[in-house]
Image 1: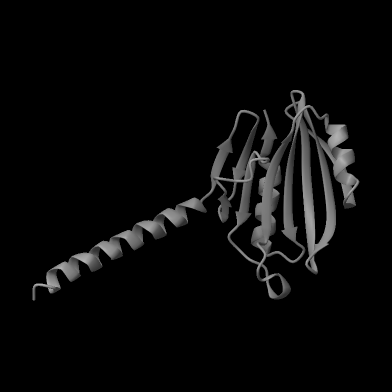
Image 2: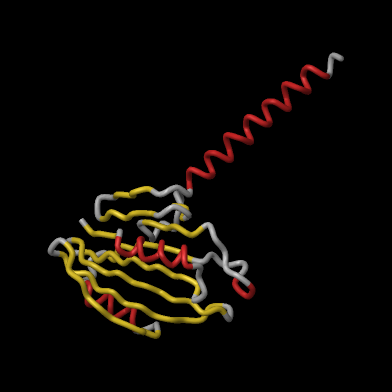
Length: 171
């Protein structure tokens, strides 16, 4: 009997902790606006913002969903923003396009700022990937949004990728 009460208290604490962990994990994948001194990005629901990301990146996130079959160990989409210090956009574009198979190029002007859009294809570990770059000047630096997605993504993730690209703006 003297073990029953401490045992029940321990079980109650474990249930409480488990519930809190599940709520916190679910909240991490919620939609949010992320703002830095140089950019704003709308992170859609289903993507996780990596807090302790690669120090060479300004922002990093990945989708909750994984691929199918050959890509079952790969996320359906990954997002990163890199700041290229002292690099003009034209130089960044030249460096990026030198190592990828470009499928389309475009430009857009949003709030008087020019963005360069590049789409490319590549193969990684036998899996087809599509890369979308959105590049813009930020003072003397250049910001590069890079979205890497599996060639075979779900409609939901494809829609969220478009939201990420359109929700990225440089200050």
